[in-house]
Figure: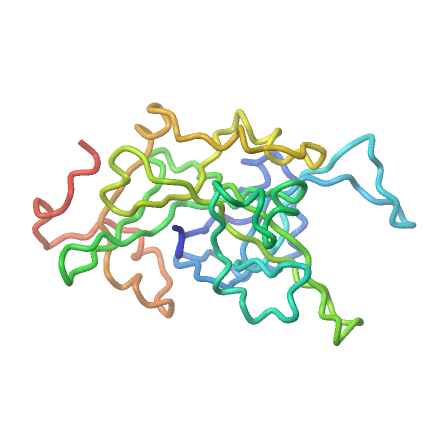
Length: 251
């Protein structure tokens, strides 16, 4: 699963990295070192643009950065109260689950992340780890998004929300947790974001050995356990403890 991640780059940097236009309109408050469910996050989407009358131009697409709430609220939901329970979607079943199948067919996105947190349990002790790229490049987590409208308040703003797709963990990542985000290499970004592609399941594959070799898994402070804590120190490798007792995930 993916229950917490970090997203600290500003929209201009992300727009350049993902070849997208920044449409966040300053809705992101700033770097978030401890992204928690129901917070606003940046997502990369690709859609057919609309003219002044709302008609789509099917001859072209535009890739933009958008702000969404993490925790998908299906369009048919009576209210938005269940968002915190819908932060992840299992890639094995997303195409058939009522909550995700429409999004899987036509509303896929990328959720840029510096990395994600997961906890390794050793008896009663839970050691947090941060998985990130060694070169500082963003991880492209596969995501799904949708639009929910409050039928009781038809004049209210629609809620745009999203979920992270997950898959079984691979290689030494299994030492931390049995699930991990679906990570998309740049070579498949165009296909994944294509709004006209109805079946993208073949793009969901385990990371290559080369991709895995570019990752660093570092033990970090248990301060990340509290969503109230939010700062660059949460991403730093812990010191002052016996790391030999931890799994050697970078061997």
